[in-house]
Image (cartoon, rainbow, N blue to C red; front, side, top):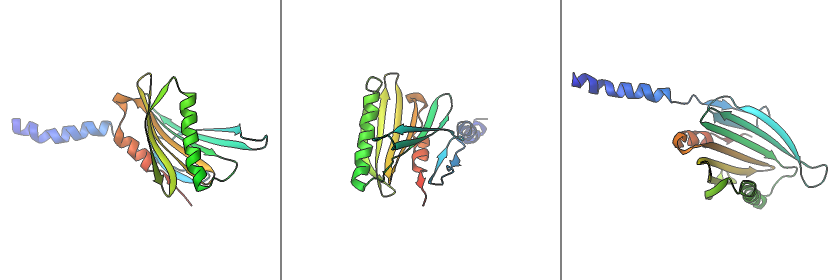
Amino acid sequence: MRFWLFALFPLILFSFANLYATDWREFQPSSGAFKVLFPKTPSHFHNQIPEGNATDRLKCDVYVSANADVTYMMLVADFPKELSQHQEMLSIEGFMQAMLKDQKEEHRLLFANPLHVQGHAGMDFLMKSRQDHFFKGRVMASASKLYLLTVESALEQFQEEDYKIFVNSFVLLP
């Protein structure tokens, strides 16, 4: 009897693992500028923010895919002018500082590591909120756009493998 129980253990374990497996879906906006995997089809929000003079606008597109425990978000900020390579890293640093300034009571930066993503300046980061929620992400800049990919959840719900699938699936398209 014990032999059968041990023989069935991998099958039972595999069955329970599939209950929690994420069915990733490729998403590509109508612009065709990039593709990324989300756990389910994201909702889309669009906004324009005045930038500099009255005619310049920062265009923001936000894509969100959430369940009760985990939120996957991608923000695309389109600047009025193209960024040089030096300005790419400056815009990333400025964005991170603005995020921390706006959330100074709520979020604490645990780490930020600069990197190159598909030949462009980027940064991986991790923030923790007062409510013990974690905000882990990657931000990168290319031409006139800043791309932010984040996963927010309580520590108990955070799945590193799912985070890696999400951020590593992001591809800029020609």
